[in-house]
Length: 341
Ligand code: ATP
Image 1: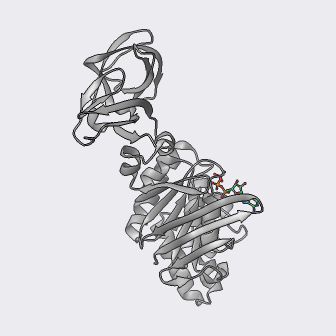
Image 2: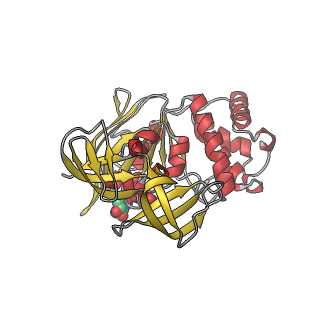
Image 3: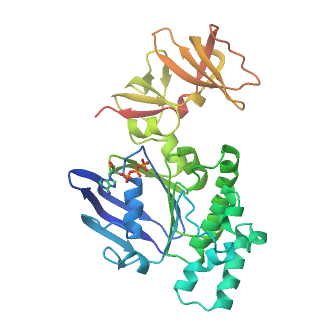
């Protein structure tokens, strides 16, 4: 496995800047997620690492090797795409062994390694089948086994869960997540689904308009978003105007003592729905909408100053109905303040 570094990577197509000076290191053995809205440059970044695109500026390094101009077939990367791209009319086993054949590995060893990998991804019993006889989730595992067979320097996954049903997707996220952990494979994982990235990845890079807005662990990105874009893109948040003075934070609807931001500041407080709870608090509000989501209830509550805030309720204990007036408690320790520029 290798550490992979993007050094001031830029990719332009005529007028369109797809990737705009990205500096990024995928550490050896790490699963790094790349998330962001449609068109932000996720796939272009991945394709540049794979060698399908040549950067307009900047470099791609695998450890200390500059591979910027090395053709894809000589980079030793493993690829898994959303369309499984398996070879039909070729057994599952031969699919997995294909890359090894290209590398000139002899037949016996190819079969052994392919069988081992199929066992590892949990579909050993399907080795002799045609891929079309397998379910979507099973085909995706074949794709993963095939990508891992060549012992790639980096594994590149582009929206691999797309097209799978929600339940299977959840199970695969957990299974593949722990498999990648165990195998210590350097992985770049592209997805538009931030929850998927949070389950699967050690760190996440949030992209917007070809640039990195923030890189951090899932918790850092959720709890300490670097800016309003990240706060808005990752999870649900309330952006509330905040004034901080003499160790007190004024959110308009309530004021709190806080320790960690002593200076005077104007800014935006990012308040996550889970920072609120219904209780004997000093914030009165009226429930305007309420969505039942099984393990939680999401409510939009109108505060006396007219602000609408999204609040996560515990469905087993908090029974706020639309139109009810409720009293809210806010845990200020979860609130993160973004300074005004
Ligand atoms: P999505 O989530 O929709 O797949 P993405 O984040 O992967 O999007 P990219 O596919 O990397 O985004 O595209 C980034 C930008 O570059 C887009 O504006 C896109 O239109 C443009 N782009 C990508 N490939 C090409 C190309 N071959 N020619 C011209 N423009 C391109």
